[in-house]
Image (cartoon, rainbow, N blue to C red):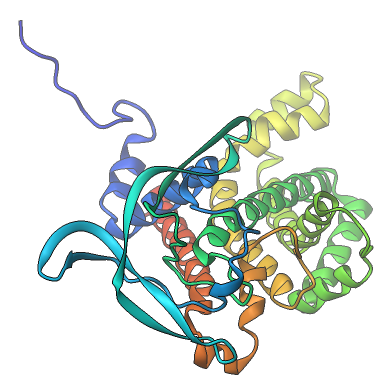
Length: 361
């Protein structure tokens, strides 16, 4: 007769209080929304990007970003951009031709791509009705659309962080968990090796590992090697933290009961100890992903990470190393702004999640 009242999403569970605490953090919720949008966009990269990342418009080198207008000569005609005409091909100077109007249409046909990496289609979210290039964030030195390259570069820059952190977490559980649970000489040797790696400067350690990596390899293998390089510092940090938690839990009653019941040590570690620190592991993942993203960006910025024909945000920043380029074409720093927003969102979400999961807060 009466409608049932609806409570929080996790009402009646152990997650209800953390959910309500996290919901009160506007910065945390906003950061989560940004991250969800970014990672959802990975599935629709070809649809969101108007052009292929390698498509070159040779006469549009270093073209400034288009300004979107809605009124032409006092009349509303919908979203459109004015055509840029190159006036100096040497210094890449352009002027606005207010007589050439390119209307922006949605769901336009363009270059073919694979939706969800499987379905071949040629429909893009937006483009111009005349087929003239549309550069929301401007063009680079070869006339390639920076916005499209940022969209395609997100696939590497956003996934490499999670992949490297999961590799680091698996290695940390294996090294730190087994060392802390076994104890003795194996624990001492493992921790001394971990401390040696921790003492090394992280970025120089990246450079050392990158220097021993083969150079003539496929983009897929290079992605794997860069991911493994980024995972090493996080793995040793995770190993030491997990080892300390295992030491504090291995003598608890439920662990002792499992050992007396004849349960193998590896099973005890994975089923009875590691699940008790899952909140710590989640926070570790959330707060470590930005470091992996910045590590890849730094290596690619120095042309030691992802290189052509692949695209990543760090590689896009490498073209802005010349101070003259930055002064003349400041839109080349847009990828840096995208990295800053992404890293800040991860940290804000991670600390909001940390406060929500803290039982003492």
